[in-house]
Image (cartoon, rainbow, N blue to C red; front, side):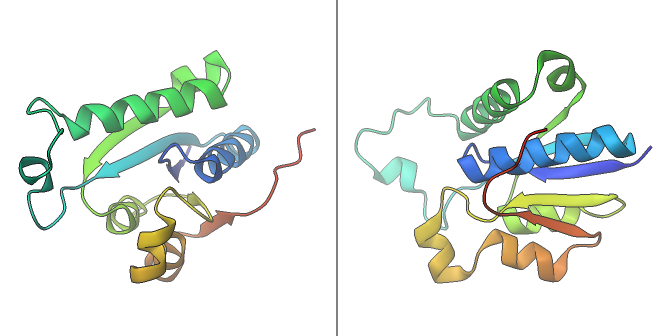
Length: 145
């Protein structure tokens, strides 16, 4: 049994990727590993931004986003079997690193960071060029049976 890695950030595109990966896992018998990553900007924006509470916990927020995405996208049995990983780092690099030894890496074509992606390149483009496993970039609508 292999491992299908799925990048999830809560965006509709990432939910489509998760649905696609779940259908693929049913066919192949692979397990699903969902990944969400977070990182602080180069400057400590939380301390410099008015209104950001001192107790702000980006890792906890990322875990909540991942749990909600998995639970609303998959049925209860499938969601219970999903390995959920919250990892600190740039999303593209985290996914490339986690692709090592994976059967497949699945991402959506657009995440929440469209503006950032336009400036530094998209996660899907980066992983399709650097992943250590085959990559599926899910675009458009997923047709259900």
